[in-house]
Every structure is written in structure tokens, then in C-alpha cells.
Image 1 (tube, rainbow, N blue to C red):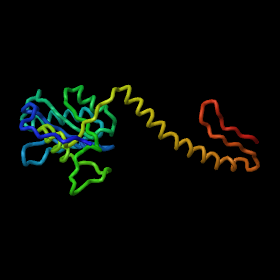
Image 2 (cartoon, one colour):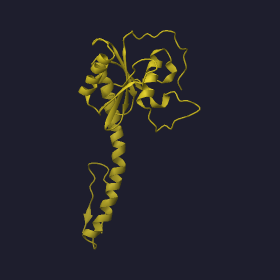
Image 3 (cartoon, rainbow, N blue to C red):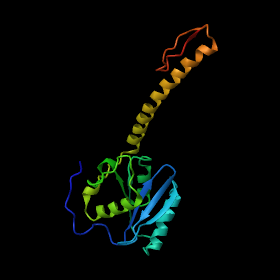
Image 4 (cartoon, helix red, strand yellow):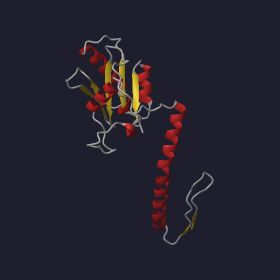
Amino acid sequence: MTTPTTRTEHSNTPAGTLFMAFELSDKTWKLGFPTGHGHKPRERTVTARDQARVLDEIASAKRRLKLPETAPVVSCYEAGRDGFWLHRFLQGHGITNHGVESSAIEVNRRRRRAKSDGLDVRKWVTMLIRYHQGERQVWRVVKVPSVEAEDQRHLHRDLETLKPERASSTTRIKDFLPFVNPNSSIFYPICTTGSQRIRLAS
């Protein structure tokens, strides 16, 4: 559970900062940039994982908002999708990024959203600004793991995915082999290690 904190009167974010929020999906990413109080955010859609296009849109937003090329950039996105390579990419270009834990995002108690429902980019922009105005209760920023630790997580996740696939493949083989030689006496052990083999006795 996130512990609410008192909202501060002033933000620690330097004046002239460009805020940017991501709404990630498998094929496309939406980028949102606030354009001023009471105005709709500037929204741009790019192909997912198109790093060069992301940087181009940041530069374009700075020009549109009459910010200098050296203006600091602060961004956010929901952590989990695509891992943390995006976070490292942004940091590598001098951008302050917040990977946000989805389960710790503030929810309107009168209208709770389903956990499977994503926030749109406008909501992300609003929450990013609120966070930098001192409202720390709007979300919780995740601790980014090292590259080695993240690789281990992916390895474990891949293994858990392969287990049911292995069982399904074994079942299909067992169902198919009698049609090859109906008179065969067939033994079907499940191959769980490199030393075990599927043996066929004719």
C-alpha cells in the first residue's frame, strides 16, 4: 500500500521542463505532452520500440512549446511491459523517467477501474504533473533491477511458459503415434531431462 504524503507547495522540477507520458501497447506507443493549464495534451503515436521516432517527437515538442533544446525532460510509463530497456534508453539520453507500478496507481474510489484496463495517455500526463507537484500518493515508482537480474527474471518466465507447451506437445505425440503403426507396443515417458528419451518399441 502506498503511504499518502502531504502535497508540497512548490515543485522541485526546474521551470521549463518538458513532461512526457507513454501509453504502451504491442504495436504502437502513444506519447503525451502537456501544453498548458486547461489545454489538451499534445498526443503523438509512434511505432512501438521506434527509439529514433521517440527522440524526434521530444525535439518536436520542445520546438512546439518554445523550449530550448537543452530543456530537461521527465517521463513516465507503466512498468512491466517490455521490461526496463525503455527506462535505460531514456536515462541514457538524459531523460528522468519513472517506471510506475500498475498495482499502486491511485484509483478513484467512486469509479474503480479493472486491473486489466490501461490508463490513457492523458491520465498519465495528469498524474505525472501531480507527482512532480508533490502528490506522491498518485503512484509508486518501481525499483529498476540490474540487467543481470532482469535477464534472470525473463529466463524464469520463459521456463514457466515452456512447461505447459512441453506437456501439450507430448500429448499430441502420444495421440499421433498409434496411427503410424497401430500394432506397435509403445512406451511414452515424458522427456524431462537431456538424458531421457522417448522410446518406441515396435
